[in-house]
Image (tube, rainbow, N blue to C red):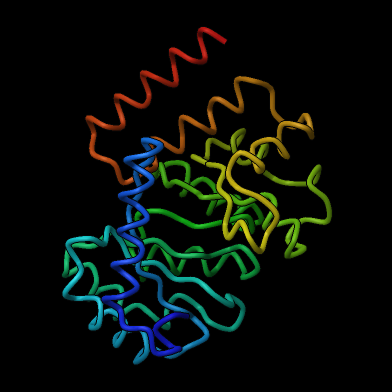
Length: 234
């Protein structure tokens, strides 16, 4: 990470927020920051990261958990996630991508996540799928990343259709585009080319992404209206 190489947190935040402001001014794109803890590091490192970010919490929407999943269960970070919640931050976590379904349950029960990153392997546990569906939990699914990391053997085997059929609020995302083969539109296109989903299914994915965002209700409603208009016109 940048901070591990000696770049001050203030410099990182300033660079990111400058880029966000430019994107909004030039392209009408808005973004929010998620402060991520690296799970291959220890709890103390995560607490240090949270402490270093405290002066900038007004610019951070949530905390997250990423990096190597296997061998680093969510339980390892329960206390730092509780501390983040005390700061009023939302919580997200990578779980059930390469790690087992039990990691998804831990993320729900111990980290009290507001959104689940990936979650593919939750499909192995019918009771967990039912729980996620009933809770309206958003899953940020990354098809091209899943392919690159061999989570699926080929894109046609991706579980996105099964997720929607099970009532999960699945969404399409890019993960790290430079590493995993494409931006959000590339991931949508990859799924569309498989024929796994029809047009209504693709629209549902877009709708889910708005419902699962951390935008305020008015912004979500406005974006949904634009999506509905485009879908009707198309």
